[in-house]
Length: 205
Image (cartoon, rainbow, N blue to C red; front, side, top):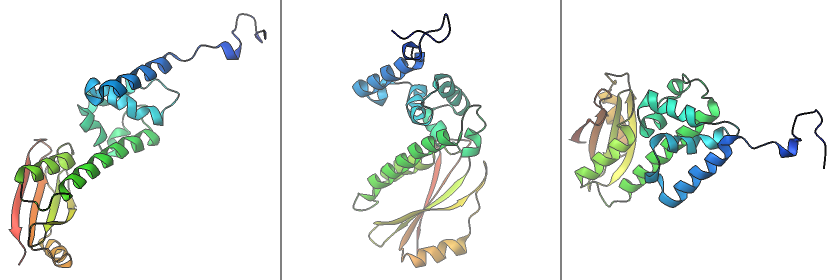
């Protein structure tokens, strides 16, 4: 048996693993068995942070993020500069959170684009809420449709502050002509009312 290099200290091989190692495996096992519904919001944030911070107990950090932004969705859709205000959050952690947000938007977009046409208003509303409901600034988005209401493109046309977003009709119509769009759905969110989405339908003639 190798002796410890200094009296009273354990050999390096016998040093106990950090306490959070067991916690991480237990959390992953709960996720494997019960999925996301089996975990609290801060625990899902922990799972995301594991990759960015392999040698740190991220539970207190995850709870701090939820306390600041209110929910899992609020955390992953927060702007990078606001996330960076949380002590301990670095670029690697911000990127991991942004990847989750991008994946959620991509899934929502694929789901709606897979439909033959945008004839279902609830489906469009669900998509817009998934993309915009948790933003902390106003965003003006346009869904460009063809003459049969098939989705051609979904584009953000303007990003603003907490209470307004600039819209330029000339640029909007120029883009509609470029895409040969026959109709538009104009959408913008209200950050002070997180689940309020305003929509208008227009014909491009």
